[in-house]
Length: 61
Image 1 (cartoon, rainbow, N blue to C red):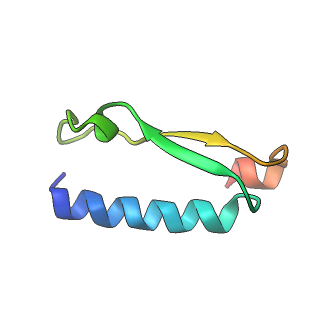
Image 2 (image 1 turned 90 degrees about the horizontal axis):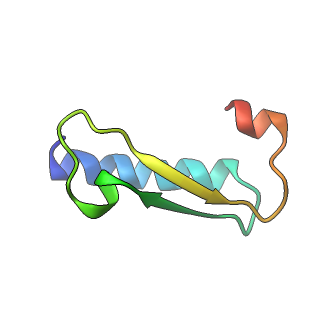
């Protein structure tokens, strides 16, 4: 994935998580995308620290 495309995907992902997660929740990227060693088909690893337990609707989306 090109750096420009990845940055666009990262921006979209941040907006999506902020919209879907309860206010005050935190999230972070880890793995090869976060440390810059990702190959072309690498996935995006996301960790979430929710401010409150996540309900089934949030988890299924």
